[in-house]
Length: 255
Length: 255
DNA sequence: CGATGACTTGACTGCTGTCAACGTGCGTGG
DNA sequence: CCACGCACGTTGACAGCAGTCAAGTCATCG
Image (cartoon, chains in turn red, blue, green, yellow):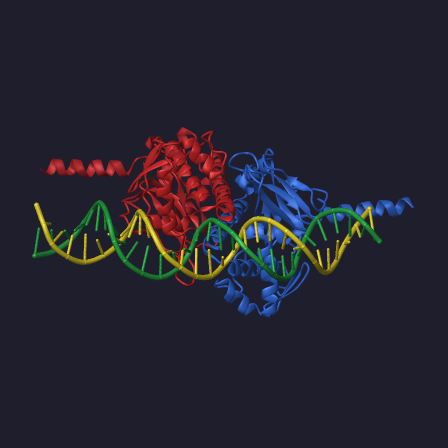
């Protein structure tokens, strides 16, 4: 059945080559604020790569910086390593988010990016992006906004790592994920964790055993329902209260 | 003596109005990578304000975002507050560094900036900066680099807060300051802390008592000499080793 | 000279890390 | 289909680092 094969290829290709204008993420991704009739210029420089399998790297620490990446589907973690080989997770990245922005300054990647599940990304060559941003004020502004938000979120993380207790950290993390999923049209009340307990603990500056214990305790307290990777938030109000943050109003980290 | 008065005013005014081309910081500040003959265009939008006294704010949390600021002399701290009123110091800022970059995304300041000593800054209205960066590719690139470096440094801070012990944190902090002073032409072996023990502890996620104890211990171990605000680094090698970072080669955080 | 704020030092407590054993689900291969 | 191995996750016991509380010292300034 040659026609069927061809169709499959076309369909895959179509799926992979969704232009920004048709992408469901264009309300939260790079194209925000760019005129419809100029969007094709951004499209033209973007390379839609084949999906990255779970466990594979998008780039490694020290890799030459050439492009930033927008997550299209799936999820990634970025992590740095200390000289004694330890790993520090610096972030988890959901569809619509950009990775690699920390590499611009030194022209090489200070962190690695690893797929937590099958993940597809848009590759945006930085030199092209930079020259294009000379022509498109909207693109310039959006780049600034995205980088600024990243700085703000990192400051927020400093607050969490600097003075929150273990409970507060995990609660804040769960609420933050909830908000980010909601922003993408998914339920804010239940989602699947794509990262391991160990990754969460590492990210939050806690031992993985602590994460495990807290999941159990939060469940006993009726805050959440945990089943392996699946999280259901039963009492969002109270979970917010535990996190010690002003997030009851749906506005929060990573909104 | 009217003439003397006038002279004083002129001299102060001259001091305050140093153009970027004559500023000793132009190798590390915003003008990096901008053509000499285009620098006047940047100069034109910059407002050199009167100095901010110790303890005064440059901006408060929630203030409308209108400009970013470059520190010309003195130093600042930026801090966020949690809803229970606690303060989290998010950074210390030395001459040549930009503050306010985290406010672009939401159009309001998520942190406050307070002078640690008498401090003068250059105010750079953001809308002007943004439109000017449409004309000057060099300015665009430098803005990206500066924001990228801020993101990278914040990631580095996550590593410190996430998995370093108290000793390692303080050692890394002292080395980082040393590197930053060196970059500005000051001695990397001795400098004055412009912030309190409490600020340092808060920034590093430690109690101020812990900072105090560590200063004493580092001194007993012959790593540093402390006299009130004055720090002398006696054994840089070993201090680096304590920090657990690859910083013996003078390259490091905040280079 | 006293008041004030910043810093130091000590005693004690407790949160969270570490170590260790055990349980559970999933994929692989027989 | 089942057995096995392995990675991941859970739970318990214990210990240590750093926080908290409290008292005391020191410098600076009015």
